Image (cartoon, rainbow, N blue to C red; front, side, top):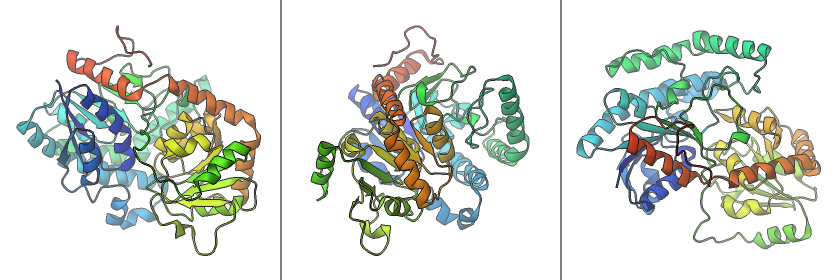
Length: 444
């Protein structure tokens, strides 16, 4: 039995993908503890893992930090990203290091598994803590000569001019755009007694031991300089619920599939749920079409779509498990949340993406690059653009074919089992787990 401590930021999209991995580790007889926000305690303990409280997590969870820092709401996306890195992720990391030291004083751990935004794991290791592994819940953020810096949403290029572009932008990001952010992180490091690193802020997430990327190579930009400890483990998918009470309109969904009527699902996930951005415009755009439109409000009441009656072809629910809904869906309109996109592609569903905050421009860019859908390159598309994009995805079989090819690629991976195999190898050797190492687990 190995002792594994998981640390994650208290965000739904950072916790949910690691739940199946934690369940796999518990099933193998390992002692698993999990340090995160209390809203996830029930899910963690249902796996057989032990929950460890995270002090002050409420102010961090999902969009709560925006209420804590109202000035961030008015910022442009890049400014908001820099602000969040400093005041959500870096500031909290210093607190979490001391929390983890106290936790490990009571019970040591053989390894720490962290989501890629939980930077305390790396700082703790530098301070004498155990080896750590990262599970990335975002598109690959690491710098590369073959890609532009993360956040710009630009396609990759390994040509000579492309690499010149990439290097120029990387220098600009490090020396101008994120210069203050890097310096801020180094000041926090100094407060922990650590020397300055000067590392580009997104590269700090790379564990020197093991870095698990929660997708397949076909959805990620090719990189000739990918670090050897990076392993693609496939999407970590939520299991179907043990119990499901279908909405009243569920039989209509089944009938649509039986008759060949197209089904379009629109979702903004569970965080950015302001319906006026994407949900309501999509419903209006497709009103009167022959498609059955299924909208989920991310837990909000169904009247979040606004006053007045819904179009006759629209059905709404606060939440429907994607594992049960997506097998009946022909296209999904999304604000490009990474995990929702992975689940859709695992079911072979082509996408229409409209998202510009956080990592969403990068997710949407990969949707377009891989050919599995359309990137609208805005968070607030017009009804006309949505109507055209949905019509194109439904009519052009190439999007469907590429999405189904992606689903076949993903079916060759078992993220929980693959991740657990790699973590066990790290614990057994205490050395970096290289992708070219003998005995590397194969897709399963």
